[in-house]
Length: 106
Image 1: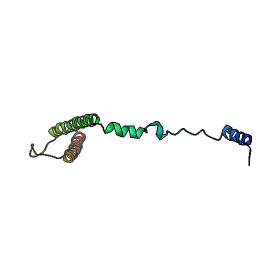
Image 2: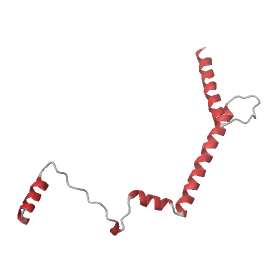
Image 3: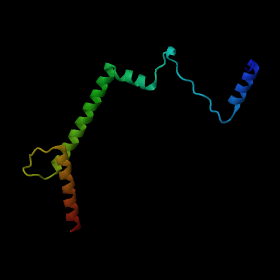
Image 4: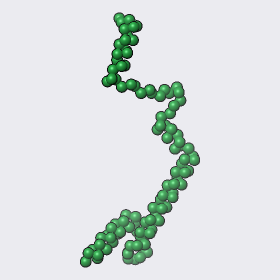
């Protein structure tokens, strides 16, 4: 069995070695520290956050729909008031742009 002095000396040699990286201190649960993810989850669970997020999302979707409506007005279709889905609007816009490029090249 090694003496207390020898174990300290071995410990000093081991910790002074350049190849040994210092350990990161882990958060102890008794300190009440929360991880970043847990703080994020708790913040997102509040009514105030959810209401603000829902409002931002509503504004985003409304702007998205307005942009599609503006694009739809620029595209020729028969009948002109035909209701198109978003994917149909995008596909029609692609075809119309290709047609306009063909007209310019001719």
